[in-house]
Length: 333
Ligand SMILES: NC(=O)c1ccc[n+]([C@@H]2O[C@H](COP(=O)([O-])OP(=O)(O)OC[C@H]3O[C@@H](n4cnc5c(N)ncnc54)[C@H](O)[C@@H]3O)[C@@H](O)[C@H]2O)c1
Image (tube, rainbow, N blue to C red; front, side):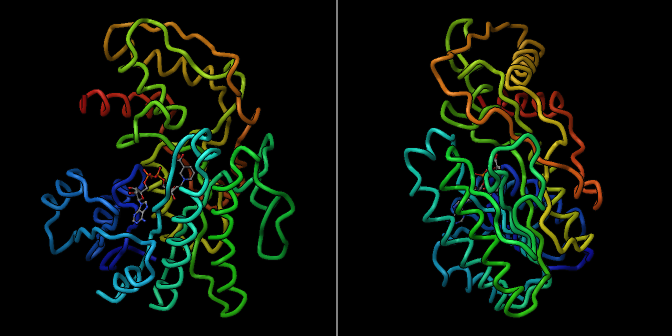
């Protein structure tokens, strides 16, 4: 299904994935894009000044209310919904404040799926997460949930509440398939996302918190959690946005991982951040490992067989992505 002439809703439009998704939908020829978020940023206002308010409509709303979602879907005849909104933070925060994740995500996922189904949209994309899997060297879609089997495992204790919450969104979509035979949707399970427009903060995700440290912690030492041995799979936000569009164009009626295909160690990742920092500023940092802190699960990498089958693959290398993210963060400071 092409985007040309289509009316599209992008939720979480202010975020790391949502913002590039809005731009890409417009570049694909969408007739109108409704960019929806709790907060409308200057970035979205700037995009609107480029494309015009007849093409890009900015909607500030809280999707945890069903009536807000129903209003959104009744404003126009919507063809495509990219439901990208989420609540994110560090594993430390999700383990101590799980209700901050679970309540809003359960509510807005259920509401958006119901309102979109009732409005008979042509296609719905749901951004799930790597967090639905139990820790494993390589996590394949068919190892857990598919349309014939039940979940054979539980999410990692380190991702317990967000993991179960994302699973509930998948289950909600599946209930519509079972009862009504509705299959016009794709579930994407991205691995760890980083990039431009990220939330760079001390308690953020691995890449963004370490980029934050480079610029905000005084002195040469950069203290990092654990010993750097654990392995992760990182993807650039723009690539995830592109994947959300490609699954619609290819009408992927499936659950599909979106990762880089090969896990890298946290050590390698932080060394890349350090290298990019030196390239951008001419300054250096010493990495100091705080081994009193947890390493998290030893390895988390998404299997890429389905991505390869559908030709939905990331285009940005880790070094390119980190350099772009760091440049944008530096320009904001
Ligand atoms: N960032 C990651 O590492 C990662 C990994 C796996 C899955 N995901 C999922 O991918 C999706 C995109 O992630 P992201 O990194 O772009 O997140 P993000 O935090 O950058 O953007 C999410 C956006 O959703 C908006 N939002 C939150 N609650 C809302 C509400 N009640 N009403 C309206 N808008 C609301 C936020 O304001 C934010 O702008 C999310 O669903 C996330 O759970 C992210």
